[in-house]
Amino acid sequence: MRVALTGCGFWSRFQLAGWREVGVPVVAVHSRNERRVRAAAEAFGIGRAYTDLDRMIAEGGFDVLDVCSDVPGHRPAVVAAARAGLAVICQKPLADREDEVEEMAAVCRSTGVWWAVHENWRFQRPFRRIREWLDRGAVGRVYRLRLSFLQSFDVFANQPQLRSQRRFILMDLGTHLLDTARYLGGEVDSLFCLTDRVRPDIEGEDSATVLLRFASGAHGVVEMTYAGLRERDEFPSTFALIEGESGSIELGRDCELRLTTRDGTVVESARPPLYAWADPDYALVHASIVDCLRDLRDSYAQGRPAETSGEDNLRTLGLVFGCYESAETGEAVRPRRF
Ligand code: 89V
Image (cartoon, rainbow, N blue to C red; front, side, top):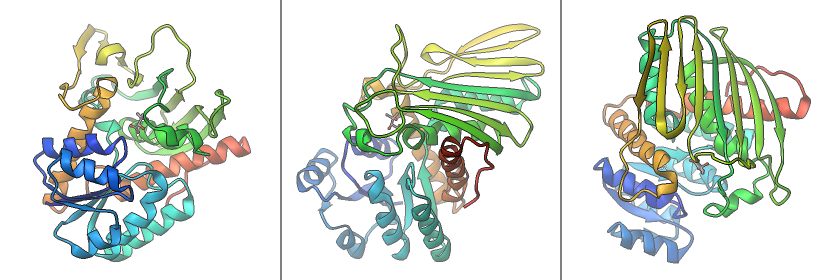
């Protein structure tokens, strides 16, 4: 598997470090910004650097295009790669407009390429451990699941483009949290969502509260904000509570998990490895890049859809667009299927 990467912003250096960590060569890199692409190529010893994406694709020599650009760059890059018969991995969200998602899905389906979304949140160690506990029935039938991501972290310092996104927290973060909700709770039948823009100096919503009804009958609550002002929060941790008929699982500070049953409480740390290249502020998330890339590498090699395949991620996006629809109409909605 040889990868070429497009987009050399803040996230790309962690993505490139992640590929190195899982032993997959990145042979070419592209950005419209010449200074950035040169810097990325130099830092990671990549021989080929391009400012013209079509040229990089035409010159070939790689199997997979990893789309790591900002959101408006996703659609053209995914479509160009798929039309050239390349496998594609794209950062989330695939697109923030439904017509663009439809086009990307149509092109990937008609060309038959292997496509996936780099959806790393569900690969965080605590969620993998919770999934194991759920699979072995540790808490019995789950009747409610809560995910909370309530932060005062200044996410705009490293990613200033997020300030001007008309659709912000549900797109940037809700994609992750709703995907994790699906990973832990299964598919969703209906949802209701409220949004708010608390900070006056950004375009989009920075707080959202989502109520889910899973196909299993379980209830879900997913709440998120970047507008928090609390004594102690812990970016980028998601806190969780999963309630089952015979027990509960809590995910708290510092990746600490508590499994409570009638026999008592088991406490376990699910802290991931701390990679030397990770930004300490994002260590938990950066570690999950490695586990996500490992799954992408292995599924590609084995010719099977990734856990976070394009098709799978379309269901997550159905929830995200459903949240905006619900927030606009004030109605509960059934998520659309792309
Ligand atoms: O992982 C991400 O998508 C990042 C952050 C955690 C900052 O939202 O954009």
